Amino acid sequence: LSTSPVSLDLSPQLGYKFISKLFVGIGMNYRVTFRDSIKHNWHVSPANTAFKTFVSYDVVKSWYTYVEGEWSGIQKQVKSNEQRGNTKWQTNYFVGGGRRFLVHPKLYMTVTALYNLN
Image 1: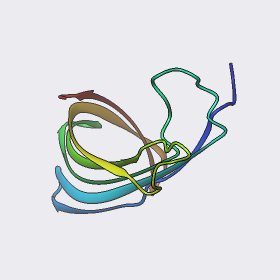
Image 2: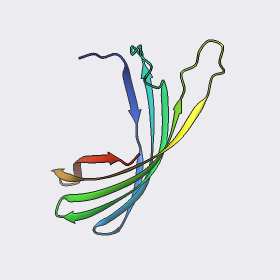
Image 3: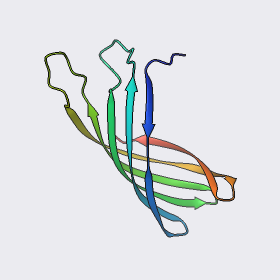
Image 4: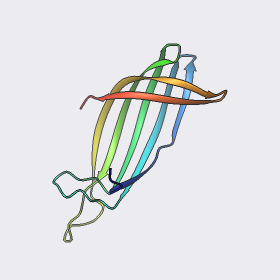
């Protein structure tokens, strides 16, 4: 195990339950990565911002299906002679499902498995 690189994520979400089984919402994600130790062609972006919309539908009891569309802005690594702030935007689509676990009367934990359609 290695703790390098280290990433910190902030992911607020806001949603509305239209009926007892259908939940629709929006969200965003911001990730910043420190100490990139990967020295290959593939690298961890120093910062990443994403905006998303999602739909969750309860199928049976605590099991649900999930669909998400996400627009990610990934900062490119810059060389010494390049300009800072280059961001590449990419669209991602995810489908999957999950299960909700009751931890406390008003607190749930969820486990979701998603497949990236790209």
